[in-house]
Image 1 (tube, rainbow, N blue to C red):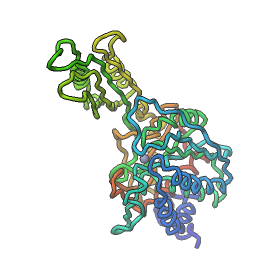
Image 2: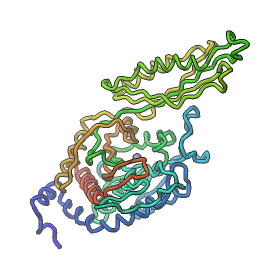
Image 3: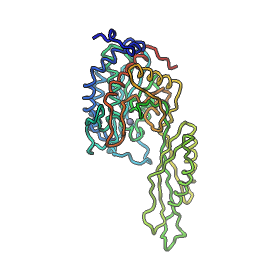
Image 4: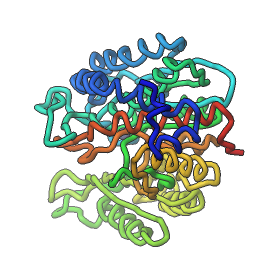
Length: 417
Ligand SMILES: [Zn+2]
C-alpha cells in the first residue's frame, strides 16, 4: 500500500516534517505485535540492581540488535561508589557496574541515546512478568521504567536503518541509575561531551508529559562523635553524640523552602546502643533537591558548615555530594521539546510539557553541556511499585516520534545552535 496516496490531513502534515515520516509510522505500526513480544521477553529478564545474570541477558539482548545495525560496542568501567553513602538496595556483591556504549558514526549531528537497564524490582520477588491488564495496559517490573523506553529507542533506530536513513548515533546502557548513577557518572559525563543531542528514554510523566525541567539532587551524611559514659555513675563526663546530631538536624530543618526550589529530607538516622549509656556515635543520612546550581551551592555550603574542627568534642563530620545536577530548561532543550510536540501532534498523540522534581541521567548529560530531553520513553505509571504498568500502544507512538525526530535532526531541519 502506498501511504502517500492515502494521506489524510494529518499525514500531509507528517510529510511536511520529513518525506519519510509517513513510512516511518507505517513501518512501526506493522511491527507493533513484535514490539509487544520483545517487551514481554525483556520484562521477564530480572534486572534488579546488582543481579548480574539478568543484567547480562538484558544488555546482550539490546547490544546484539544494535550491532546488527552496524554499531560497535565497548565497555566503560565504573567508578567506585563513595563509601559513606547508604548501601544500595540489592547490594550487587561488590561488583562495580560498568557502562556499555554501542556507536555507529555517520554524518550529521551526533545523537546520544540510551538509558538504564537496572530496575528497582527484586529479582526473586513475585513481580516477574509482563501481564495484560484492561485495554492497552500491561503490568510488569521495569515495563515502563525503563525497558519499554529502551525498546522505543531501539525500534526507532531499526526503523531508520530499514528505511536507509543513516543517523549518527551512540547508545549507552548503564546499570546503576536506580541507585544514583554513582558508578556511571563519569562515563555519562564524558560521553555527553562527544555528542550534540541527548535523548533518554525514561517514562513519560503523568498525562504523557515530556519533562523540560528537572530539579537536581544530592546526598549528605552527618556523623557525630561524643564521649561515652554510664548514665548513673558518670553522666557529667559524657558528651552525647545523639544530642550533637539533634542540634545539626534542627539546623538542617530550617533549610528547605519548596517555593524557592529547595528540598531537604533527613532519614534514616542512628545513634546510641542502650538507654543507660551516653552515646558516643550518631549518624544521619539525607537527600537534597534543588532547582538550580546556585541553590545546590547554597545548600551544600550550609550543610558542610555544620562540620566542627577535628579535635572538637563532640565532633561533627559532614559529607555532601550533588550527584544529579539541576536540569533547567534551556533554549536548545525548549527547541527539541517543541519539535517533539509538533511531531506528536502530527501522529495524533498529545505531548504536554512539564517540570518535575524527579531526577535521572538526563541531569548528568545536560550538566556536561549536552542539550537533552530525557523521558521520550513509554507512557505508564506506578513506577517503582509492584503494580508498575505500561501503556502498550505508546511503544509505536513513541518510537515513531523518536525516529521522526532523529530524521529531522539528521536532515538539518532542526537548528539547536
Ligand atoms: Zn528510570
